Length: 77
Length: 377
Image (cartoon, rainbow over all chains, first blue to last red; front, top):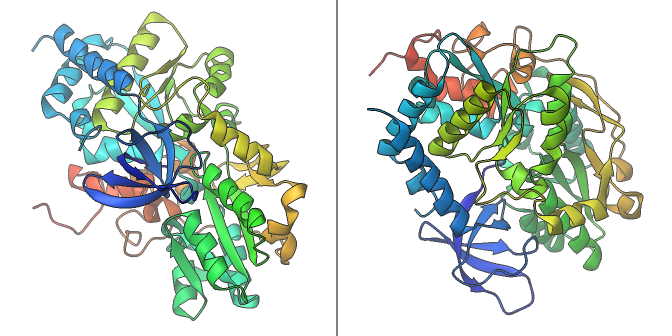
């Protein structure tokens, strides 16, 4: 129920409906931007029940991946 | 797929598993409650449990809104659609959950009730616009992740002057459930929590700080991907080894300390706390659910229609309530894999795509601890 998918914003509709077209792994979906501010074309957002919930922070994603790698460095095979 | 594939890398999972194995103290048992059903499914689907040392145990929590919804509320919805001839809109997660007398929304639909599965509250608004001569009721359920879209729809309905739309509100709150588990008269032994992913993207990590502080329980906000779960488990193990009890955020790519304040403001504008609400498995919990504010009473289905509280009991022998508290595991239920399967569910934990029993059945039954007639491939 709380699952959300990362999706890239392809188009922000210009008809004042607050809707956008996003790509979820190549599949185009219409979502509402009513819950987010300051999103732009190309941004990745978390999509849940037809709404963008949050923008995904690329820098933080890179840091998290670095944490995994760091754990790997400390592990002895 | 960006932000998915890199968090499912097999080589990194092996490295994380080695790091965890080297970090645990062999003489200690680590009991980590994963609050969300999404975590439960990640643990089983990707075999995370099997990558953990034997002394790291995952305890499944109540974080599945379909599972914790009491049967009486589903009975209410079925009565509503059958007696008042409304169009009932619902997320698909709910349609197969057993109601009283082996009934369900799906069976009511098969019997002629106008029940429509929706993907988004935007769909509900469209159905209300297209059926101005019919009453449309949205069966709203979910934790804090799913609540803001309901608030948006209510505000939009007012702006559009939609007089035929109401909401049967069953939105519930994560921190209240966490508190209920920690305050249980017979407490479940839990050392630390994997905190919710997408709930926390809305409410932030701040609401959990009181639990870490007052109850001395480490909490790590964890993403739903398998590497997120493993990294979060490692962070919790380190906290326990160090004697720390803090809120840490592994899912920082989507969660901040303060969360999505725009979404929170929308919810606070439209909805308010109920004095108490019944949860399957946890009983009545004070201040644990939301209802529409008086200013939006015209959109409240419980005010527009006669919807008396219905006390209903679960199927005899079904252990869903104890499983939701973390007091039992699915394999402790005699019904699991015998009369209770996804095709013939007896309880909500087997129906929901986030239910612990569904996870055990779908991914865990071949581990040999579940009665089943299905042969290993």
